[in-house]
Length: 184
Image (cartoon, rainbow, N blue to C red; front, top):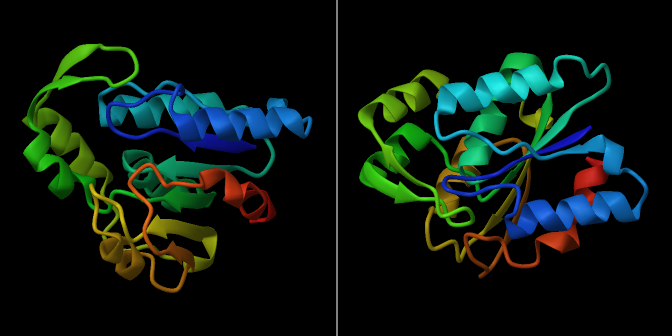
């Protein structure tokens, strides 16, 4: 099972989520792909993913983009799942402090407020250090205009890492890595 976790103010309609879902369908594995619409509350997002995956008996690989990478790391550590991290937010509780206040979801237009309570939820999910680097695959681009890729390189030290020069936060050319993700 491949589970895509989207980022902050995003949805399953994001480019990477759609492309990966289309790829899984094109190889006859649409039943092995899940991309839930995550709520704005980090705590509720984790509860929702865990509930959706509870009945699944096979291996699970999370693919988390940005904030979804933060969630994927927490879930991988808690459940022993594998995680592919795409330009992940490392220590999102610190990174998103500047985002406090009114927000608008890029895909739905939903307006909501990011609060100190959300930051506290993120802090409770923060993993100070990963325990089994072999469980992780990092995909990062140096041109990420939102996050410093070097934070992820250091945090996921010992994990398999694919670092590309240039690119952007959306991870330009993500589709080139589908087979790498499936092989992982």
